[in-house]
Length: 472
View 1 (cartoon, rainbow, N blue to C red):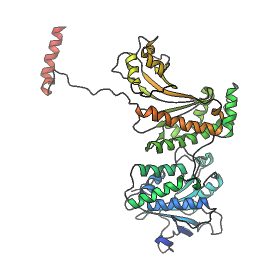
View 2 (view 1 turned 135 degrees about the horizontal axis):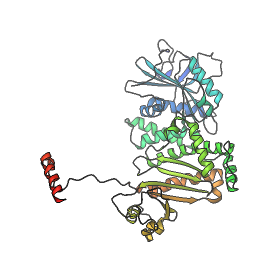
View 3 (view 1 turned 135 degrees about the vertical axis):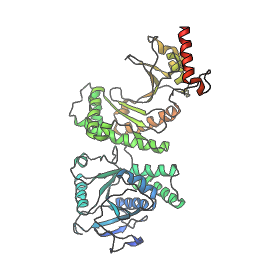
View 4 (view 1 turned 90 degrees about the vertical axis):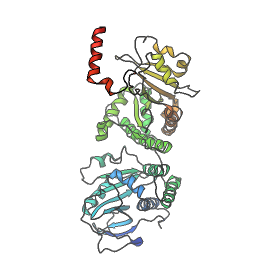
C-alpha cells in the first residue's frame, strides 16, 4: 500500500462534517462530497465535481483506477475521503482561492491529499489559477493538484497547458479529461470489475449521468480555425515554416484528438487502448511536438499509432494533407514458412473475408532496402502473382494492409474532419483489423529418429559425427 508521505496535517480533535467525515485541520470550511449535491442549478461544475468525488469515496475500484495516475495505490486499509465547498485555513477564509474539491487518502499515519479544480462544458483551465492552487497546496501541506476539464492530455502527468508543464513548482499537477473519467467508469463496468452489486449500480448511474448531454462532458469535436488555414496553404503548394503558428496549433489539436480517439476505441473494444509513443516523446512532450512538426513540414502528414490489447499489430493512422485523405492500417510480418511471395500474400488475403474491399490496399516491403510496392486488394484477389512482378528473386518481408479514405472538401472543415476520422478508424478495425492474426514461428519439433535423451547422449552424438564423416 503506497500513499503520500506527508504527515503535517492531522484529523484529531477537528470539527466533523456530516456523514461522519472529519474536517481536516487545514480547512476552515468544507463538506463531504454528496451524491445528490444541493447546489444552484447554474453550478454545473460544482454539481458534477461533487458527484464524481462522492462516487470515488464510495466505489473503491473507481478511486483506485483514477488515482493510479497520481502514483497512488489503494489497499484494503486505505480510507478515502472527499470534500467539496472547501475553504483552506491558509490563506484567510475571505480569499478567492477556493478549489472545487479535496481528496484525502489515509493509511495508518500516512496521508496523501490533493486539491481538485474542475471545468465543464466549454470552460477551460486557467494557468494563473492552477499556479495559485499550487502555491496554496504548498502552504497547506497538500501533495498534488488534480485538474479536470474537457481538454485532453497525452497522459495524466502531461498537462494540456504548456505553462503548467514548464512551471518550476514542486507540486505536481495531474490532469483528467472528463472523457477519461467516463471511459474509466465504462471499462470498470464492462470488465465486471466491481465486486459489490450496490456499488456497481451506483457506478452505472454515474456513467449514465456523465454520458448525458446535460452533464457538459464532451469529446474533442472540432479542429481549430488554423486547420483550414493550414490546408489552404498546403493546397496552394506553400511551405510550412519551422515557426508556423498554424502548424503548432494544429499539432496541439491533433494531440487532443488522438487521445480522445484512443478513449473512444477503449469504450468500443472494452479494453484499454493507448497511444504508442517513443520513449523520448513520453519523457518530453516538446520533443514530440518538434518531431511531428518536422513530419508535417516534410511529408504534409499527421500520424499516430494506437495500441489495442491482443490485436495483431498497432493501428496506424495517417492524415495526409496533400492528398486530403485518411489512411488507417496495420503492419504484419510476412509468414517465413512460405517460400514464394505469392504464397505469403495468399496467407494474408485469406484473413480478409469481407466482400467490399473498394478502398483496401496492400503495401509490400522487401528485403535489401528495395522500394516498397503497392496493390489494391481487389487486384490481388484476381491474381496474387502480380506481387512478384519485378521482384521474382525476393521474398516479401512485411505487409501493410490499409484503407485509404479520400474526404475531399470535408477534409479541410474543422468539424467534419473530426467526425469522419472518428468514423473511419473504428470502421477499419471492426471490418478488417480485429480479424487479422500475426504469423508466429512454429514451435520446434523432435526429429523422428530421436525419441529420448539417450539418442542425444555424448556417445550417440559421437557416433552420428563419425557417420557423417564417413558419408562425406
